Image 1 (cartoon, helix red, strand yellow):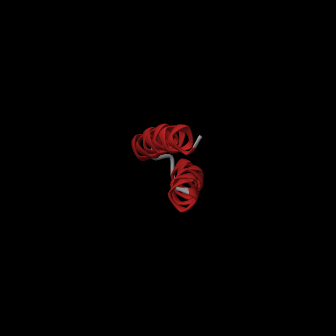
Image 2 (cartoon, one colour; image 1 turned 90 degrees about the vertical axis):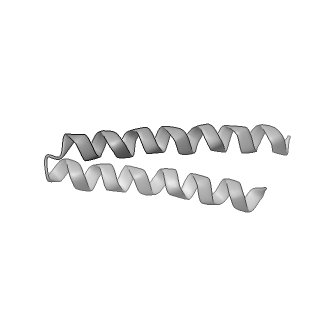
Image 3 (cartoon, one colour; image 1 turned 120 degrees about the horizontal axis):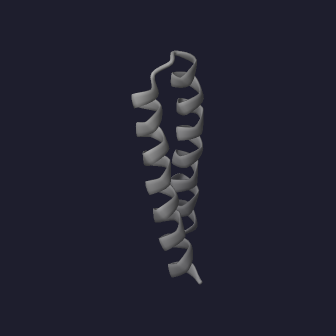
Length: 53
């Protein structure tokens, strides 16, 4: 489960970078997409973390 958690959190971190990149291009729609995607990654991370305990 540690590997799954690592990769989910890495995906969430990547979303932060993507948001910064698309905000530089003033693409609000795409930024919102990556913000929502990060939220989903974080929800999955929480579920994985709860199952690990």
